[in-house]
Image 1 (cartoon, rainbow, N blue to C red):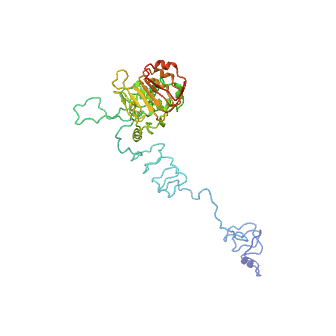
Image 2 (tube, one colour):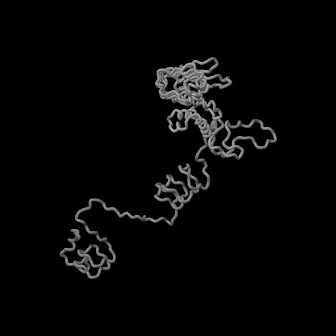
Image 3 (cartoon, one colour):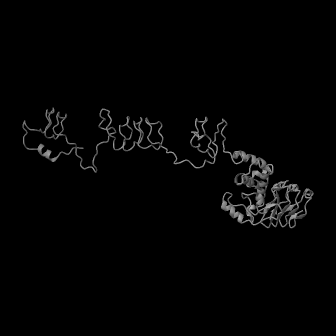
Length: 430
């Protein structure tokens, strides 16, 4: 569009006075620019600019003002370049976006967003949160991780897989020239994982059986499967599986594979407990927590059954699966520990109307010294296993008022030649 000429310029250009030779401006532009600029601009611009501009040419005016102030354009490159590529003597108050190529001589008040390319001459006042990829030139004055306040009083329950970096307090290989004034510190409560010999380190600590936990479990299970059918262990909730888990992992007596006879008897008693619904008995059920002393005492207080036993036999009234010999569980009696034929062997299990349910386990065949088996007035089902023919010493068998069914094998009666009392009434046996 056309430029709007200020009013005061128009008044001068349209004056009625005749211009003279010394006039500052002509009505029409000359062919060549003057050597010096005029004080006033012409109404029509010249073809060529003046050589020297005394007064800046005003930009064209818009008819309407803008709604905001104009700002200088932003450049991506700073106007002031660095001075001779020299470092500043003091750090900047705000960290720069990128680190400097050369570290500053003093520590900045706040760290930069990214680390410097080269190491600083002195370590920082406080350790960084993460380890540096390469160490600083001088070591730090304070270690990053402080040591523990004091050594532990007791050794750990299990030995470490590797020996310690520093040796334990042990006597010197050669005697000193003169005796010491005071004895050496006491040795550790348990041996270290690595001995003085070159023998390999065991993968697990030894238990009270002189075996690793894995070896103890394996050897105990090898004995257990000779008593029960291996197929019974496929079900994790079967009486055999529950009994094996308890005697290996939860029984506080911690029997060893070397105690084969004791292990078999205690395992069979546990199988009997889970087979006839021991957790639902009226009395003498196992504690809710095998490791809780209060739970064990509460279970013992809830057991008041004690079997009739012969003089010299051992009996008790503690809850089943408690950390005491099975001979003292309520309803059980055993031979004396001084018995020459079978010391501490179960010879009686007697419950009457105690809420028994389930099936008679075949594992009871292991109780060769059994003389009395009285489980009357319950909810026992299935039949009497043929395996009970091994109970040649059985004198009393009382299973009346249950739900037993099936046909009794004649081999049972052939084996029970010492039987004096057989009570199987109120069942569905044939």
